[in-house]
Length: 424
Image (tube, rainbow, N blue to C red):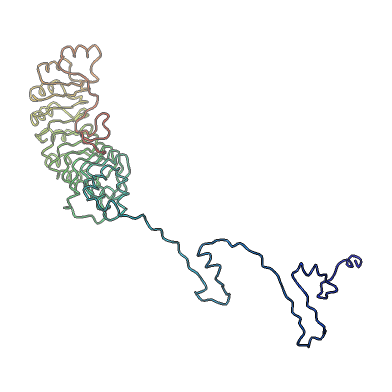
């Protein structure tokens, strides 16, 4: 190890030990001194350092980074001046003014009417002005909510917007219809509803009562396959302007329920009571107390309860009938056909399908009448049907499979009820 270290020189300021080349490389130079005494004031033991500073290229940084770099934080300094709070710069919007602020309410409403209802509901969240315009009743006159599920108080909110035509077919409507603290009943927008389709919808009898209690300007109503009770029918009877009522396949239709309707709805011209399991007492009430303004009625599906005397009383009570459907009434005989021919001079459509006690020869009595359509399904073979058509050339036989009396939607018209569009 001694031999290895002999080749290296130890660091020293002695000019005899350090070569001049090494000192020049280090940027040092030694000064000569005649005296070895450290107390001599004239002695110079100063070492001159000539170390050139290398040029360092500075990186450009943001003002915030530069301010952070120049700050010195002390561990002992706990004051708030030692910290820097920086905020993101707020970007200014484009210059100019809102174009909608220059438009009148009428112009904006004319724009909104082209938007879907879901988009209009989202636009109501923009501003107070837009909310007022989006909830204007002009935009909510017609609405289609069929096949949906309406949570509690949603239907009341829709009616509050002033809907005139509303389709709720196959809709599940949850109670309550209105909020816990509803607006006064005299509030006009609740009474704007005139055309309502509740066909195949799921709604309670209490929901029907709440609905009819506030909406008393109905003109056309469909409750097909709904459950009714006396309380709901009593509220329905307050709609004195009701013209069309579809109650086909309804449950709970009895004498007391029908009594409220025939006493309150005096302007009915179309009434569908098909397959409501009417009793003899209910049929007697209808045939003797039905509104005289009736032009179309369907009481099919009565089977053994409808008899010839009921048909006679109905024909005498409502001589203006244009359409009559008494299909599936097995107790009816040819006497009823004679009563119909003698009393209903304006009759254009007659349906007596599956009335097995009526012979086919009786229908020849309509050869010189104004009857246009005759449905006698389930009674004729092809040969018999051809013979009957040859005997009654002016009457179309077995053309309509289903009754259209008071029904809101017929055929492929899925976007309208009673001929009025429910979708924009």
